Image (cartoon, rainbow, N blue to C red; front, top):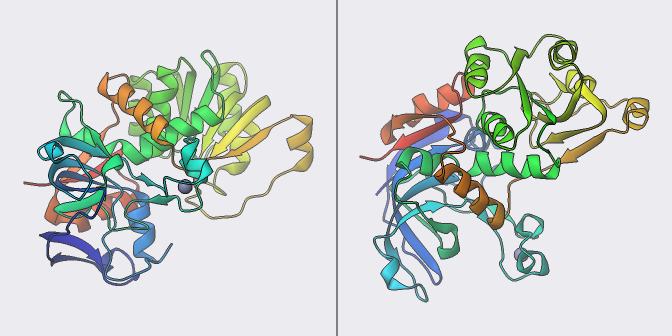
Amino acid sequence: MRAWRLHDTDGPDSYRLDEIPDPEPGPGEVRIAMRISALNHLDLWMSKGLPRPEHLPHITGADGAGVIDAVGEGVDPSRVGEEVIINPSTSCGTCPQCLAGEIVFCRRFGILGEHSPGTLAERTVVPAVNAVPKPPHLDWETAGSFGLATGTAYRMLRRARLRAGEVLLVVGVGGGVSSAAALLGRAMGARVFVTSRRDDKIAWAVERGAEGGFASDSEFSKELKAKAGRGADVVVENVGPATWDQSLRSLAPGGRVVVCGSTSGTKVELSMPVLFFKQLEVIGSTMFTHGEFNEVLDLVARGVVDPPVTTFPFDRLPEALALLEAGDQLGKVALTHA
Ligand SMILES: [Zn+2]
């Protein structure tokens, strides 16, 4: 089969399209002939050694969908031919956290493509539990793309306890997680506002039910309060230092800022008096449980949220990565298999 493999960590040019033997499913695993392989920022970060794969060459890629074409020992052989979506959250499955369904707290929690060979290949082997039946009417592009980003956004909003009628501000709405957060927030009945560096992304969010949008490099906290009539109950923030100060200023008293990443740097400042006088909460979140994945799949399958996707043919990964790196895309970027 053909697979995009990282041979080094010198940036996106470290990916090479290789011809390698098909992987064989082990006990409890299935092999999937991929129809869609979707990208995440993780695929860019890993090409720069953040983190460096344990072994090189390495196949990255967390998201995808396809058809089971082989099963390992202990897996029902009738699953061959089943159309499935890959859930990228992996864990040991036996520790107390896993048994309680809170796999994100498992000591062996991992992301497909980071800790094991991923989806940027013509065939991918995953634990059978990670191959989730694809609703028949759901198109392949959406099925193979929404997983990591929409699941992450969903857990963020849950952890931030977003309720109907509350004001939600999504900072930097173009990316996969942020665009999904805007759609999910609207579906949950929140009043959604967004920021972006680009007018077309703000226009997209407004078309999808956001009440307004502001430039990410403006004093958007003031603009939000003018437009919404009050501060935000919840801010979804994964930009980091570039927008952190404005994000905190945007919060209403008792507001919650929820963070799943930090694309503009790793350190921010926090004014302690602002934190305690305004009784703010800073909430971290990463990935999602199997239960959350299934709830998100239900929302996507019913068309309540439909995250946007831009596709390229499988052999054009470099162009797809360049688009992702430039931040020019809206939502997800994915590779299609002929
Ligand atoms: Zn575990």
